[in-house]
Length: 472
Image 1 (cartoon, one colour):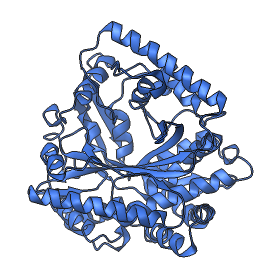
Image 2 (cartoon, rainbow, N blue to C red):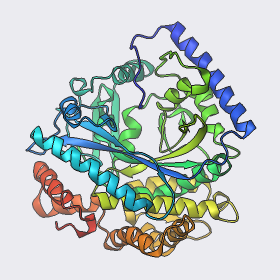
Image 3 (spheres, one colour):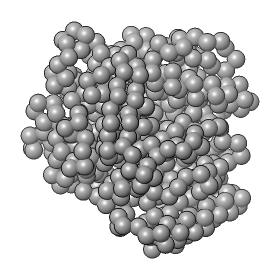
């Protein structure tokens, strides 16, 4: 949803013309795929991080227009709600020092965000779901001032025939909540990891990202609460899936883990976009078909947990990217980089396997692992390859971290750098202290003081220490 659009009142003719352009651009992408134009792109890494603005009481502060004007950084942009923002960064080439460079770049930009927020009497926070966000904040009056967000709200409820969202999440406690706009989506913020791959490796990378999702969603879990209910370890997953639901079957859910692995190419999800997903935002753009503007906007309204993207380099050459969306925002810069290193190393190792690993872990099991891990975190019981069922924390330590080390070594990273970043993940898993575990532990010690939790979290995040080192 990075593209702004130009209008909110769409005619039937606009929908028809948009679908015509979408068909033409999908056919063009298919031609590029046949011609090999998406091959041999280098591995590159990028990321986006969604953040929160909070006031001195720990409540959401709906002031992102002031904040962004004060910051004046084109890489930091609005998000759906006026209390959210998004940090982007330039892509990084694979090689020694890549995660050190990621950390340095992110920390520098985050420090500028902190300074701009302080000048406005605010704080910036990175967390999956802010514990203090509530019904008083999640309304259209707090929608960011961009046309695409107003249009998104109207079109989602057009497809729902005006029916409200009936949120239902059963975890440690059960939550039932009725909502009449898309603002529930604003409560769920994430780290989105982008992996650029060549077309010849894109299928294996896409499938590997799905296989890795159970581990990464549990290791990075940071949203145990919503509306003062104790729910899943990663409540962001069911919350986002229901926040923009428009009905239909598993084949047309707007937020989805998917229905199968990719088989021949990453063209397959884009064909599915064309054939199975109604157009939400038929904004007609004055762009040549070669820009794929309509294809990319439509793809931006389908939030797969592992989403294929088409991008262009500085010379205009197209490439595929995999956007891994399952990791929650938070908890420190060190944790965010460590989560990214774990994901990248694991995917690189799975790509390099002699036989396709997806032939040894069915899609149905990968999907079941993901939802178990989102619900139960590191304690989830999952299955991996030819092994039997067992606890996810043991699988990560005994099998997945060694795989990730091999993948990072193959990418050219040295032993010290690999040990430093994956060591943070290992310490977190062995201690059991994820962001979600820390938040639950704080509430267990101090009681349901939600503003107090936010302020304690902010104080510890400011130290830059990994979450497993935070005191309760």
